[in-house]
Image (cartoon, rainbow, N blue to C red; front, side):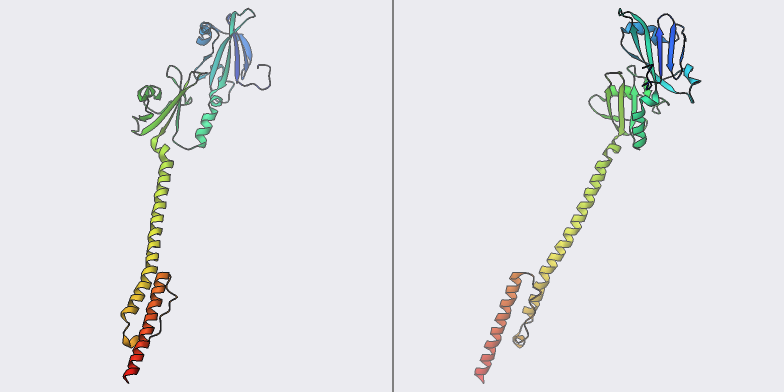
Length: 277
């Protein structure tokens, strides 16, 4: 990794347990260190070779080699000789902005009210790393109070929030995602409004269709009723009304039968008048 051209970390520091150190990366040098200035290196022997991850920190020896102060997170492991004896520790350091880039990119791209918090095993908040969380409480402590319910009342805003969490098996960090319930249900509310609008449109269309169909049915009936009411002996010879306006077969046949009956009545009346002469 040190000799490669594509280093995956910003800084690699090799410590032995005799006070010597070699730094490679942003700052490359070889020197000594004083026991006690790096607590993790002093205590890493007791881990038995297991990894130890630091909290975000500002490396004083890197400040003068950076354009602006950067926060780093380091991973420590012990290394051994050919006999398996621990002879030192290796530290790999990476900028926090590189470690959490996927989270910050997502939050910048999606302008929603998603809150992301990352806590170490002891409850220390390490994300956001560049500023102190604005809330007056710890979501890490709130996790123990929600039990099986994902809902949480934010004491700062009195909003009902939905909270979920997961623990990384590699780092031991607890990832907490929080979002107001209203924000989550926004698509549901939008769909509900669309359904209500569609229902109103269908109702209006149904009423219009009902009115149009009833008008088509009632108008011929009214015309036929007027024709029947106005029929007298003196109007039997009136021309038969136009039947083209009748859209229904039953009304058409009824009107046709009535016209036929009136014609027959006219003929009978005329014959009766002739016989009296």
